[in-house]
Image 1 (cartoon, helix red, strand yellow):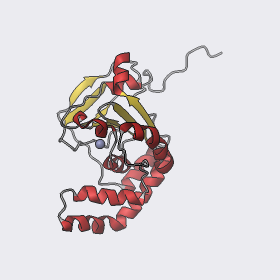
Image 2 (cartoon, rainbow, N blue to C red):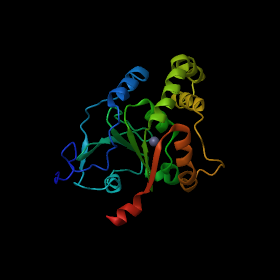
Image 3 (cartoon, rainbow, N blue to C red):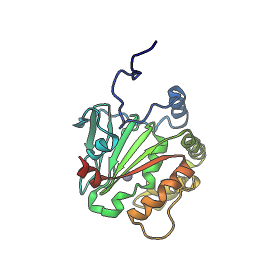
Image 4 (cartoon, rainbow, N blue to C red):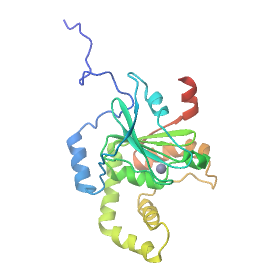
Length: 234
Ligand SMILES: [Zn+2]
């Protein structure tokens, strides 16, 4: 008769802050090598580090993610560490070859900082990371890919294989200040990225209506947490 407790296959406590491994990791890797072979950033920066306490819940870990009023951080999470680097005022570099990544928005932007951008979605679809966290002023958005997300990502890859160069040339020729951003907007239109109705870009409105839209249209698993509420609980 079996009396022993079921063992974690890794021999470690459950790590709630990391996504559960993709069921067929080899196929996941193969998908990204086929569809987005050049979208993979794997830097070894002089990372700053925050230690993750053992047995912390996912919320407790994500509450420890750093942020700043006037620039962005980008980084990733390991079993025991948050590793991150200071980035640009409005751009974060996310090492998308890691399983679980994050970036932050400048908190001085208030409500606007609390809503992930189209560029955030675009980069998540194209990168190998399975989970990514956007740290706003008050909110944390946690996105996980599902098999349905890969179907959407393939649609993007197929479209880009034909259209990326001509669609990049168009805004680049016009000489706009953000031609990459203009291109990403066009690419996301192909995926019918849902935008909550109404003109009010309040984090409350987006928090209420966007998660279901992202689940339905992009197959993302979405969780949204309050940063402050988590801090009070600590
Ligand atoms: Zn962002």
